[in-house]
Image 1 (cartoon, rainbow, N blue to C red):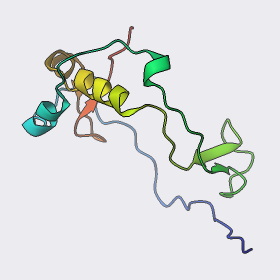
Image 2 (image 1 turned 90 degrees about the vertical axis):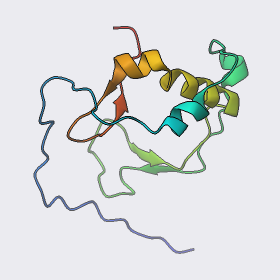
Image 3 (image 1 turned 180 degrees about the vertical axis):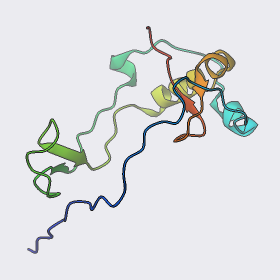
Length: 123
């Protein structure tokens, strides 16, 4: 069995925050195919018993393993990918996210992200 030591990242630049102080709407439209593919006939309310399909990650990497022990708020750094929702739940979420009301009210742009959806939850 061999082990690999992962070195911590080298920071060679200064982190810069957002350029804008207020949210801005994107000037470019999302591709229509993305919106069309997300449409579904029957919308359902989220039901954890029906929509959850959690499978634990195969590996949890610790802060110690990546050379950052004692930093951050958790001893865990990152996990291998894992499933949380079933396919039906994902279809329901995509249908809501790419619906016209959500795109009209919750779609923003920033210096970091060209298109993002935010503010869908209760304030």
